[in-house]
Amino acid sequence: NEQRAWWKEAVVYQIYPKSFADSDGDGVGDLQGVIDRLDYVASLGVDVIWLNPVYESPQHDNGYDISDYRAIHEAYGTMEDWERLLEEVHAQDMKLIMDLVVNHTSTDHEWFQRSRRDEDGYREYYIWHEGEEPPNNWSSGFGGSAWEYDDEVGTQYLHLFDETQADLNWDDEAVREDVYEMMNWWLEKGIDGFRMDVINMVSKPEGLPDGDPDKDWVGIEQFTNGPDAVEYLGEMAEATYDDYEAMTVGECVNVDPETASDYVSAEGPMDMLFHFEHMSVDHGDRWLSPSEWELTDLKAVMSEWQTDLDGWNSLYLTNHDQPRIVSRFGDDGEYRRESAKLLGTLLFTLSGTPYVYQGQELGMTNYPWSSLDELDDLQSIGKVEAAIESGEIDEFEDVQQAVRDKSRDNARTPMQWDDGEHAGFTDGEPWLPVNSNYEEINVAAAEADPNSVLHYYRDLVELRTDHEVLVYGDYNLLLPDHESVWAYRMELDDDAVLVALNVDDTETSVTLDDAARTEELLCSNYDPPSETDAALTLRPYEARVYRLE
Ligand code: TEU
Image (cartoon, rainbow, N blue to C red):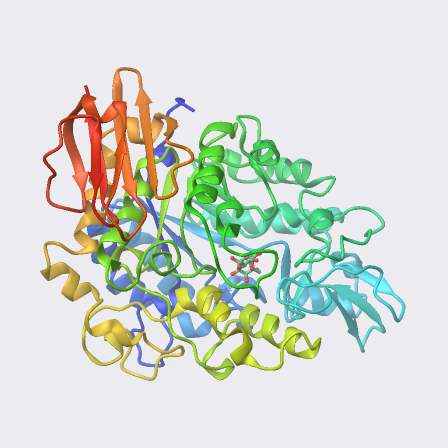
């Protein structure tokens, strides 16, 4: 882990273009909107932008359903706009990584159309099953069966997501070659890497065996980490990005530190991965069950990744698929500001590459959804409709709280730029409602307020840049069983840093030997305390980072 690399030292900022900034008043964000706001992104001190999919797509899943990998979705602009964006990102000394979605394509993609017509070997491009009944019990990540009967062909095809997202058949060599060619086309354009969507789902086991019917996502243990996943991804790396200074991060469903090491160890096919283990601590068994969580679980999971992974960690607390972090693991009421800063402190003081999702740096919150009509997210709608259909619930109201807690649309409400109409996101009607707290929580207000979450995030970026121990250090968890305090020491050679976080809305006192060794308070979300001995009294959601002697 002490092997240096630019992407280990980088901070990544994630832009969800549909919700970032709309330059032409159609209510949908676009590439020009991103270009217009690049000064802001650069001002955060981040090094890399990860752009969610902007390719041509019917947009059933906001671009994760791609119909042409080499074209830009019309509402976002043109290829020329995209090229200008890349140029301007580079001119600001930042890098751009693109989303790579190759487990599946849109059913509008030419490959699927040809497959349907059984043209020149294209049938094999997707996973078809002859017969009236599906070959197994796998379910879609968005609810319902993972198989869809295609009237035109008279057989079924596999879709692990929406029925408009057909899984590619990676066992077919022509598919893999077409994918690699497309990746090289983008690398040639000068991009700096890929975020690879559900990339450990590309290899499906022979015979497509049934999954455990009690799982929320039936089949998950079958279609993740399949028999050839590591081999195919190794082949992909060799055929494409290994020849470039690219950075790669693979989204991997159902991995623990041990299985993850196959992908990200020194010999593995990618630099880092996104796992879901810390995003599962409040789920219970099912997506629709109420959210309850314990700090000790979150600590245990994240600590395990810090210590047990043979490879480099990526650090994220939220993204376009997850609720807003201050609403989830913080307090989006009285202590919104303090808890948003505390969670930022956590993100920037662990070992790994931090990813900040748009609006996180403002402490943006979840949205109070009150009906299915207000939602756009396929997953929330699909899960609720499937539960109604199966008789598990009667109506939306039965699961309203779960939807408010978990819906992916929480992260997708428009970015809040100022206190003007629609939060400065658009001159038109926004495609998803703006959170009504925009008059208080927005970029302009945060810029003007020296105590804002935004300024604190800028300080965190700087802190991490100035202290290698926060990038390459070893993590040592202190007080593992404490129910509200998360304390750890990061160590690198002679450098040591103590991080103490009170993840609770009441004052808490703890005794830590390290606290008697503190030399300098590097960062805190409160006015400096007066302690100088082993006893620490932490105020609600107080976060402190000390350099130790
Ligand atoms: O997400 C993969 C995925 O498994 C998520 O849908 C996850 O189950 C859920 O969001 C957690 O609650 C990726 C993309 O990030 C997502 O936006 C896409 O919808 C999905 O793949 C299909 O491409």
